[in-house]
Length: 279
Image (cartoon, rainbow, N blue to C red):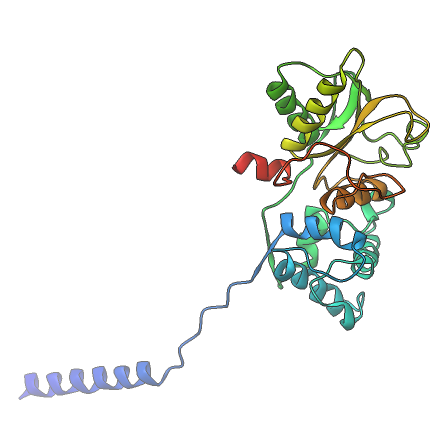
């Protein structure tokens, strides 16, 4: 009898525990945050402000919307501009956000960097396809960042020759006629001394193949001698003037103030350094 009572008690307790388990609410796993593709955001931030309208950069809308919604939530961007187009209003709003973090100068140009992009997205989104310009260094006697050097080294490998640099990056004011393009990162002027016209074009082509917007500049275009001007696409240290040249390159212009049709060698598709490496 004592054994029977014990079994009944055990069964009753087990049933009670089962009922409690059934009645207990199931805690739903927290929803995963969406991911902002930094490569897509930077591409849109370069191209969209140079467009005549509000056409979206292919593949960038979802990531740009994440950034714009976060700016809107901070009352930095009017809701009417939360549209996936990283135009001048979004550039201005992002620059205001960068200033709120204490950034100044080129660090508050409105072009997102990985640190500010992650801070803006806290609890809202994560950041993927991160872009990093790398630290500053000297190569061929000129200042540039690690990403630009890697691009240049690869172009030299494709060419089978080394290139002379007449102006590097991070050169505020720069050489006369540079119009601020060398104030930040990713900008190079390359010597064409001793090169034929065909060789100059081939150098520009190889630079484009690895991710530069590159043009052969001539004395007829401005107050300079023959040289090759190159801007590393998607370099997050770019000056605003360099950002505009990158956007114009994507849109088929020559990177000059007259915005004439691109006069450089045709390279398709137009790729960044990261895209080139994945090919």
